[in-house]
Amino acid sequence: MEQTNLQLMKTLTETEGLPGFEERIFHVMKTEIASHTSQIESDHLGSIVGRIGEGQSKILLAGHLDEVGFIVSGITKNGFLRFRPLGGWWGHVLLSQRVKVLTKQKDITGVIGSKAPHVLTSEERKKVLALDKMFIDIGASSREEAESYGVAVGDPIATICPFEPLSNEKMLLSRTWDNRAGCYIALKVLERLKQEKLPNILYSGATVQEEVGLRGAETLANMIQPQIAFATDVGVAGDTPGMNKEETGLELGKGPVLCFMDRSMIPHRKLRDFVVNIAKENSIPYQIDIMTGGGTDAGKFHLNHHGVPTLVVSVASRYIHSHVSIVHYDDLEHAVTLLCEVIKQLDDKTIQSIIGLS
Image (cartoon, rainbow, N blue to C red):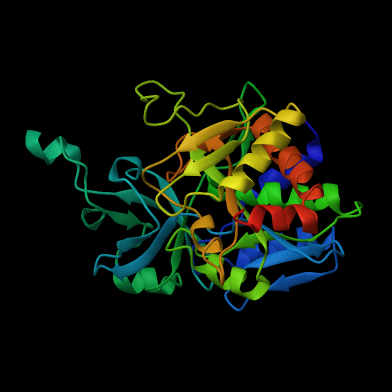
């Protein structure tokens, strides 16, 4: 594994970017895009892409900048913070986890707490604790002390977990693979294709506010108006104890994931088949995912104007929407390779054959 790739992953996954508060990761992404192209475009919400190529047809490729987290909703008289979710969370993964409150003055470490289990009834212990029964302890003894630290209602709250390759160094642990994996893929595609003579114009980067309603995907697609789009994201891995392969058969290290259905989109069949054929021709491993729940930015991309043939290209990830997640290095690299091969073959004639209904 190249050390430059690992350093990029570390920077992307350790930089905070909550929905609506993506400034820090936006500037990281902008710096990385600028190392590959001087043509950078952003919408008014903060979605950002780099542009390469001189063709006629426009291809949009994007992950999303934002991560799941929280927002300060109140401060108790004793200095504890009440909070609400930014994105989807499950109560079981929250308690006793360290978090970082991003105030205007400085970042403040806290821990998520609740009523002690020793005083719960047996029935209470069986239930998933609701978020409104939890709080964040930042070590303050009063509301005034908490406010003196700079904490205010409306401050974003991020998770804490450093990037780390595990004993099998291709197994990569971080807090924000959903969806810095997609950001990494978008950047590496730009890097590999910037010297190519593309038959199209590629816009590659990331959206904002995906975790709270695919909002940046809508504004970015409206700005670019692509003919073809790809959303890069993560899929739910099923290769851990207790998982049912009928629910998800995705495995780490078995190749990128092509999503054939989710709650927000059924991909354009001709584009789907085109990508599958490219993978087979180039001996690139891939997996197929069919989900009844969940969605990605593709759900907004494909509805842009007259309709945009769109496909989700993901990597399997364990433990998403928690404080930690794991992906496989090979899946990331194969996703980049597949998308590069696809984009190089999307000339005007091919795109028109995909868009046409005949």
